[in-house]
Amino acid sequence: MGEMGFSAKWIHWMTLCVESVDYFVLVNNNKEGLIISGRGLRQGDPLSLYLFIIGVKGLSSLIRDAEGHEVISGTSICCVAPPISHLLFTNDCSLFFKAGEAQARVMKNVPTMYEAASR
Image (cartoon, rainbow, N blue to C red):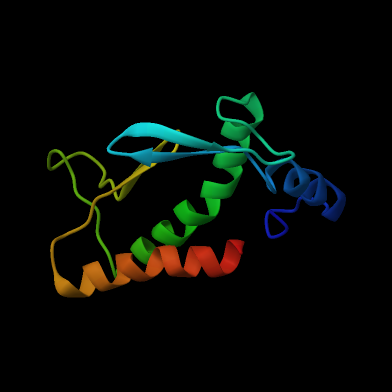
């Protein structure tokens, strides 16, 4: 968020919102055991969608940068359509690139770079 121009105070506020949350453990797709924490965004909180959009902008930028350097190439649905390399929706990310070892290696490294940048 700092790279995108948000002030340190605003980043601190957002960090306080997401530092801790309540968790359920999924066992065979069934919620089991509630883990309660003291504060944080809860599932369904309207603010969480905005934070997702802000946070995932960095991931999207890394993927577009890889496309710009032509180390990955997206896929097109027809010859006149622009290529699509990724689709982001709520908490889902779908990646599209040509099947090959080199592009797979690049796409494997993108989340690692994103993790290092976003801490």
